[in-house]
Image (cartoon, rainbow, N blue to C red):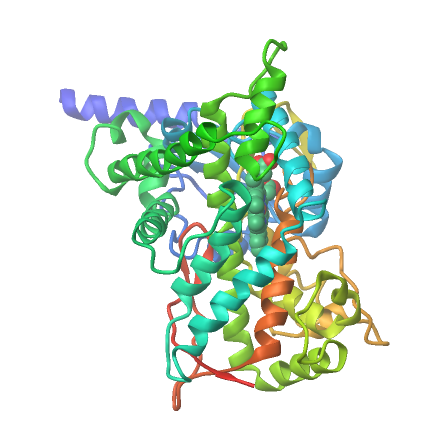
Length: 483
Ligand code: HEM
């Protein structure tokens, strides 16, 4: 009797507490306690969420555990929310699993003053190294030669490009933050990369959803969510060793890399009100640059290879354009981009179809807002569904087919439709966009200049994906031959 009463009591309390308010966006029926946690296929979350938009409209709601979430779909709604009402959506929700790791520090998941200061500093420092006096361009081109050597060593036999590309792209971030690269196969570095992969996979899994929905319980239960803490602590230790070395031979008048700039910023901002520059935030920001800056670009390149082997005629057209504009006797430069509209269009189409961050990162309303005729109260998690924009039938001629023509006008000039938002939009727009675009262009163009890509004989490319931090192609092998 008592048990029955307790169950009925909990269910009724849950029902009353979690009813959708009247003007709230509609959505599928939520179950007691878990809400819509199992309405969504967590292996294909973005597809589930996009399908639900077909049923409930561009602005709809779900409840994960006790937390209300509103999913935004389509170009018009995302622009209205992230850009026009950007001030109300500038914050990230507090995700217990991340909070337990970064304690509100860094850039990606910080808010308020920490976010403002760390983001401003990151943007200006990336600009300094990306496009200022100390350009990363020669470093990227240099990294390509290491990568090419590795590709050549397979002598045309099938291999999985994953590790090499990961190493190559991570080395750009290493050069940026630490001032040096790591040899491919370096034991310390390989360990770091493997840890990253494992941690990121867990963050994208149902374990993270459960942890964030029921933190008090999950903190006590065993599971993969527990190892994640150890992994991040090891990554932090790795960064702290680099930091210690930088401090030992620091010359305040020389800005070798990000850490040098940061040490200078700590010195300069000392004593200022609201100062957030300290070594803890330094470590958190460096970690954020790694998390956000390695897997993303490397995954995009792995999609690029797959689309090139799937569409040999497009690969050949890219190579012909590169041969005509750059030739074989010099390396590409970022200034070539304007003269390579077809190549540029192909890279953009890879990013659109690759759709590697399909749901952007979550935002949270910091006041009540009006959207699509509904009222969304303060404190509701907002998921900007980038997938619904990158594949929006109203914005793209052939949304589900690889088509570089999406980015070319009648005269073959490069054009960028407004619905191209793989880096999201508004105040939280990816702060590495310029660096990512520079890396993608220089790596892709160099690779196409030197190599032919194909599948092993008799094997067809599989365009399916697997979730980690990013939506990545399932592991594959390809053949690379010199041109
Ligand atoms: C945030 C995409 C490369 C650093 C984001 C967001 C997206 C994104 C969708 C979330 C924006 C939002 O909250 O609305 C991508 C893609 C990349 C890429 C598709 C490559 C193809 C990079 C690189 C870096 C970087 C190379 C750093 C060097 C960041 C940071 C944030 C972020 C720090 C958090 C910004 C904030 O919260 O203020 N990125 N990114 N990203 N990205 Fe990227």
